[in-house]
Image 1 (cartoon, one colour):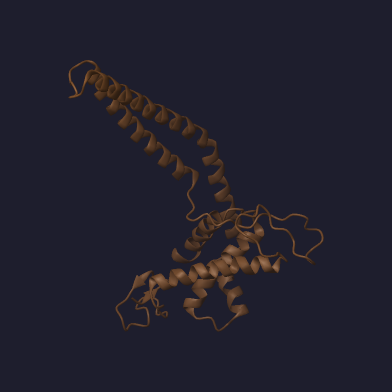
Image 2: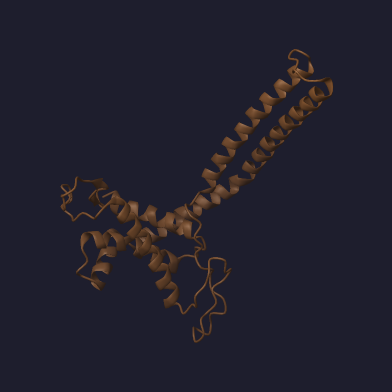
Length: 241
């Protein structure tokens, strides 16, 4: 279905202009997102090429200068590694807390059932040897689940400092960017390079330009984190308006 990237709205077939912003529609939301991903990949490749880097893989720990590149670059920051969707430390903490609660619940239930069996309140239809073995296994499983739950909670406590540092870092980077750029300034730079850009093309290149400035201005070794920051900044500059 025709889609307006600026208004995030879909239209029936045959509509070519957004009824709200009057901008041109793209083929579909899926096509728009695919094109956006391709733009981001091209931006990274162009950035690496402009810095004189040879081809590299995602497993390379560092990007080494290509032959004939800047002599003073003995080592440069690692290429942004594609890590899929960015998951913050706070979200990881919440996921771990949920897992810990699930293990605690299951472990408690297994131990309670095991205790009832050991007390003879429930007698399993097995021979004495098999019954004792099965009850022993149940007890061990319950204790294991509880152990995993407690270990997970201990790991959550160690994440607190990381959460604060990560959120502080994110806030500082976003504020740094917004102090030097606004929506008008970014669009002016894009249109200066290519005044013929349509609204849809301009919308695609905005994300690319934001990410490019983040890569050149900050040390961001994680591709997913860079994408997250670019999306946050894009939302503040354009979607809020």
